[in-house]
Every structure is written in structure tokens, then in C-alpha cells.
Amino acid sequence: MRLEYDKNIPDPQNGDLLISEPFLHDPNFDRTVILVCENGEEGTFGLVVNKMTDLLLDEVMNDSFHLNGFNGRLNLGGPVEQNTLHYIHRIKTPVEGAIEIGDGLYWSGDYEQIKSMITNGQVAENEIKFFLGYSGWSEGQLRKELDSQSWFVKPRATARQIFDLNEDELWKSILKEMGGKYKVFSNYPADPRLN
Image 1 (spheres, one colour):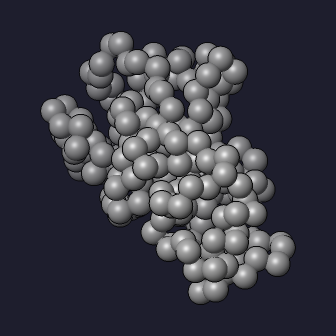
Image 2 (spheres, rainbow, N blue to C red; image 1 turned 30 degrees about the vertical axis):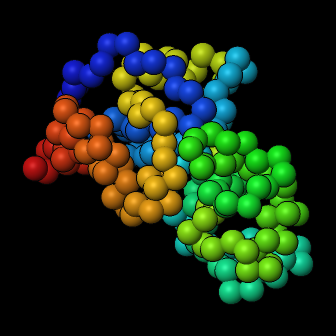
């Protein structure tokens, strides 16, 4: 089934969301929402924000990281380098080296400072998300996928969308927020033959 989408999808900017089209046949990106952290001449780096793993943070930490009751589940950031740890946050205390990619939404920052803040109880679980792996595209690769209508672009993600909405419903919720035909797409069954 081929749906009629926008012909001229803009290149995503840092802090935008990529939303997979309803029938994308890639198990890595089926009904995913990806936060674009960096999009430049060398390619695009993003994190899938609606795919959880069964792992807890303390299960993957290999250093003396005292979690002090903080023990969030890890997200699967994407299929690339799943042995790496990444994070986004909305911590109000400035984090050295953090990159603001949206209004009150930050990517990365000083890992030792983050660890110290968690150990000292200065970070709540709803202020930071940790990811194993990431989603990456080489130069021009994402543009080809946009031109083939594999993705929708939702400008300017908010911290509320990333941290407060239910991950299991995020794909559908974002499409509904976009309105119009996207709201209709949000109700498409995963397999229309079963409808």
C-alpha cells in the first residue's frame, strides 16, 4: 500500500522528530519516533525515544556508579553500536558540555557530573533517559529515505513529548498532534490485511 505524503519533506534540524511512516518494513524502525540530536554535513545522529529494553541502568554500568534508588529502564537508541550509552535530559541544573536541542531538552553532557548528580539524588528518573546504541545515517542517506517517504518530520520536539508521554503510544500521539492526514495515519493498523 502506498500512501500520499508530502512531496517536499524538509531536512530535519537538531531537536526535530523523525516519525516512521505506518508501513515501514524495517524491524529496527517499525513505528518509531527518533529525536534528531545532530544533523550536519557528515550525516545524522538520532535516538529512538519509544523503544524500551528489558534492561535496567544498573545492569549495564561497569563502574562504581551508586544509583541511590535511581534505576530507570534503558531505551534502545537504534541499531548502531548497541554497546554504547547515550542520554538526553531536561535537568534544570546546567550540565557541562550538554547540547540544547530543544526548549529545555538537552543531549549528552559531562558523564561524571551526571553520575554525581544521580548519586546525590539531584536527578529524578523523569528528567533523563539513557539509551543503548543510536540511529545513524551517512551523508545523504537520510535525504534519500525522506524522498522515498519513509519518514515524517515533526519540527521542534518538546521535553513533554519525550519524557511525559507514554512510550508505547508515542508514535500515535505525535501523529495525532501533527493533525490533518497525520492524525488519520495514526489510526492505520500495523498490517492492513488484518483489518
